[in-house]
Image 1 (cartoon, helix red, strand yellow):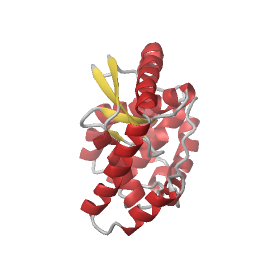
Image 2 (tube, rainbow, N blue to C red):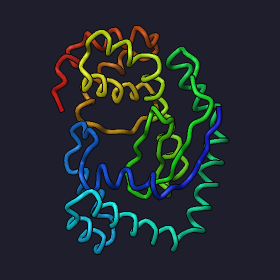
Image 3 (cartoon, rainbow, N blue to C red):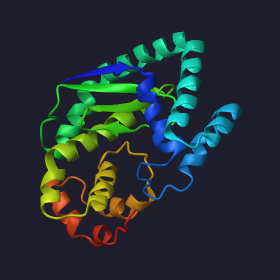
Image 4 (cartoon, one colour):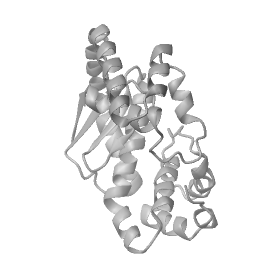
Length: 228
């Protein structure tokens, strides 16, 4: 298995469009996420993106902003690509080994692409096998994000389809996916809707994953998950 680290303006635009312009991702109870991310951007950008009423207009604003940012910081971007590639390559065995031990199953993919983002949030695309890392992330954060997102990939590959066939609600499955990362000792992610289920799952640490998920979907914490 290998990581392939890149920076792409087109990819970097995704979290800007789906969070900073209009919140399109599940928030899992994280109130004010859109506003928190926007406030760290330059004042003129904040004004321009708030004025954008159409998707086309928002994309223009963001593309111009990211092109200007890249042009002024190309050396830094290139350096961060190399730094993050080196960090992931040097810790790949530990990341994958930990996931395989946790799930009791082989990591199923030969290559994962890692895109740098300047947005301040790190989305992923399971179907296309990529996730994002903040361009200025330190080593601890890089490894935490990689473990977190690849934990999701393992859940999708081995469990989500079967649970969907059992008729389990999609939103509850997504909260379960987020809660499962509590079994990783390095988890620092906070999603309020997943916290009760995390507490339940933490007590099951060390059991086989099949058993953990079976108990989880029968739990009161799972049944009490409210719609997004």
